[in-house]
Image 1 (cartoon, rainbow over the protein chains, first blue to last red):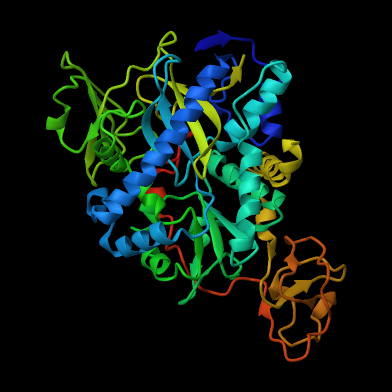
Image 2 (cartoon, each protein chain N blue to C red; image 1 turned 135 degrees about the horizontal axis):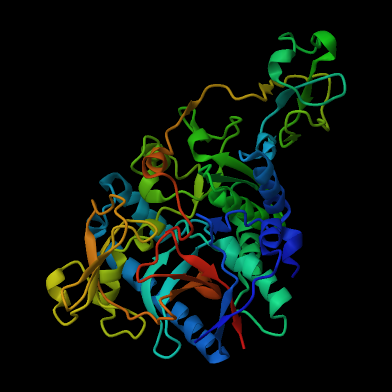
Length: 381
Length: 124
């Protein structure tokens, strides 16, 4: 694909702030980077859509495999959650079932899956809203692979009759940059547009009254979308209450997402679909990587590219920031050669809802995509 | 689809965060799922419950009094007008105060503080 440089709009900070993006600059450098944009052909977008659909189907099979063969213990998930995950996987409680695939793509060979972020995926506002209005103003004659906003509103409308309350709570951390607060607030807007009532609650303000979860005002929480990962919740004091009351409090996303948002699913994909064009060979065993002289060692549970090691055939090892992840185990993944645009390496974030491809956002970083990555808009031309 | 029309809360909270740098006052408003008593001043604006008299329906000093809201009502942030409340309780109904009573809290969130919160911006 093509990367074009362009002059940012002179008042770009104000413009994106007015749409909610207040975390547009980090350490004096733009995180929302409109000094460039990627350009894709319609055929390249088709490839990404096709890859999204294919990988989603493989994930359904992989989930079935893990549940059937009782392999949840390889996921670092506490034993007290296993039955609940199995039950939720089989019974399919109401869920947005949304997520963001991270694909490596060079515009030519098939997109390759790095991982699926589908419990608490972020960069949602950037992909759904900010890049859309950038395109409308700066490259209005072009299209963009983006129906994220309307697709999520439509999904809430579908869900509404199945929900046990039409008051939806939205739980999040009160993060200093405002990213989590605003992303969660945007998710509230999506639900409200679909006709639901919403209430925000800080994660530490969720109360347990002995029987039920309540918010900061002691209103019972019956349905809750959370921008807070399952793997943290189940290891915290209230985790056991969550699992015990799944019949009373519906969490979005449901607990079965612990299967997919965990890199331990990647070796399962390699096992059931060894030569699939959209997969990178991944294994729990380093010895399985003998054919792949370049590989990446990743903790099965980690965030923002932390604790990743790239091992290259010449012996060089490139590591990312140490945030103390890795206790639950690691996987080894074939190294993908990301396209290099003057030292910037883009990763495709392909959004899906219930298996349907709905749009994408692109992040650029060095060889490992971490929390210093920049968001870059794209067009279809 | 006009996305901008669907950003009512997002833009309001963003604006508030940029001014105050802390959680938006909008967060103090909520929708109640049970009959709720809200303390108001002489102009009908919501104030802290402590300003109202403990006794039912008698009104506090200085014009402070409870308004009684039915289940499903909107309780606004402090300082805002309370709509739809009654000065008398509905017969046979018990009302919960609008301020939180002590349920146990802090059972979520410790992992975030030990890791320094999230960055920009990938989630998982």
